[in-house]
Image (tube, rainbow, N blue to C red):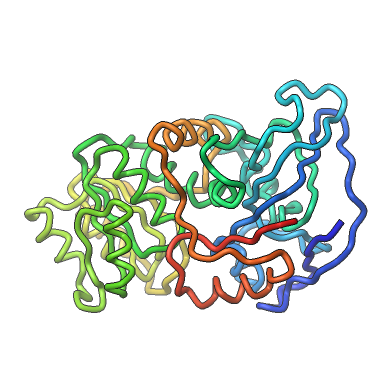
Length: 337
């Protein structure tokens, strides 16, 4: 089978095309023919040697997010019959409840092999069935970005209709957050440096938008739009570069879901959190049960993931370079097979 692997963090040259034997499923495992994979900023961090969590670079198959169909069953498999359209969960050990201790040690495309391959073996517990209305390319966008957005909105303080959500930028997590919050009847304020991207955000469900180049103190614009109250939820993908303004954008008791490492900045003054009386919570994707909850909502509302570009399997390094350019809106996908 064809696959990509990496043995060193060599930037955009990290992924090497290789031939490997097609794996066979063992007891309790299934063999999935991968049909599509989608990229996350995490994949770029791993290639750049900047990923802060567990990683194994011994011929690692990269990329966490993929979808395909089950083509063979190992002995004792009970959850599947074969032929199901599925996606792997980000952390193969986190099935439900509170975050497990080995979350990062079982994360696809980091500590263990990922999905940028024609075939991959999964434990039967490490998969979910795709919503029927989604293609493989659309389904491949869900495991990391969509589940992370869902966790940010529902994992601690569940979003309620009529609340206000602030999203930053127009990458995968942020676009999913706009779509999911809109479907829940929430008011969404989206930020970007591009008016063209903000126009797309409004088409996805954003109610108001802020160009942060025109409004560098964008937390003040958030308060203006909310009548001085602030927002209930912030989906924070920037990190230290944007976190102080996200904290300042919340209402008292609001929630900041801390996800990304996109923007660099100074250390956070804890007095900012105290002054805002807000909750700042790290969001490490989410468990299988959360993925399944989200899929029910996606199916009910007919939500279609936003895909910016689709590349062929042989173009995977070009797709990684497109991710690094950061000009996309939504997800970058690689079609396999």
